Image 1 (cartoon, rainbow, N blue to C red):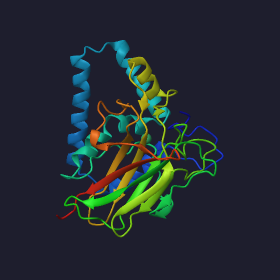
Image 2 (cartoon, rainbow, N blue to C red):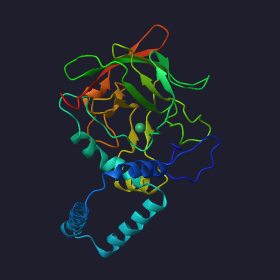
Image 3 (cartoon, helix red, strand yellow):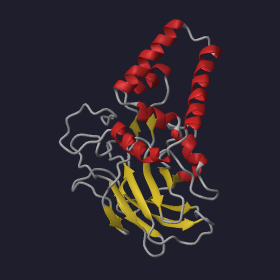
Image 4 (spheres, protein in one colour):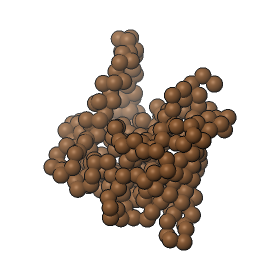
Length: 284
Ligand SMILES: [Fe+2]
């Protein structure tokens, strides 16, 4: 894919980098202001874990310097957000998942806040000649007891038919295939979009080098990303997969079967899929 996490490309549409977005989010989150004791505890634990890897695997001097060089290039390329999303974010999001709620999945580096507000039923913003297979995504948002949640917000983002994200790729309108959809008074939604296509982890940076050298699968399957929010409920950030044959994912050893949607094809070639998002109440 041409989308990249660094800010080196001149675009003819507004562009973002994962690093810029993560810095904005970090500045908001840092208001939590952890204590000096907590910072010290975590920093010491992280350093000890790193040293443990060096000792247990008899890392050589040459390997250590190669690692230092790779870490420097990771920072120079603005790829820390990508690496952390790949290897760490899922641990945090899964632990925050309330019992009975939709399984969480990593947000990834391609989320952009502030997208157009849409009311269900709706069409995601797309180009007039948007290529791809039409997809009607329907479903509901409910609480864990099955009661509908009216006027919940679904913040949706996905790749286009070429596996590219808007906002990170030249020539694609900034809000293409992105939007915040409000459910109806019964918690229902119906969104017209296109079937997203798989994309690969950027191959031209430090993370891509790691995937190549380690011979890891660099591909992410077709997904629609969603963050579902409603006042009084824990938000859920997840990804919906489709039964298109993909069984592996660069960011996970296993795709949660609950998040894999069956596709049914209508007479005009439009495919349909449905899903029920479940949110846990803040005070059940
Ligand atoms: Fe993605």
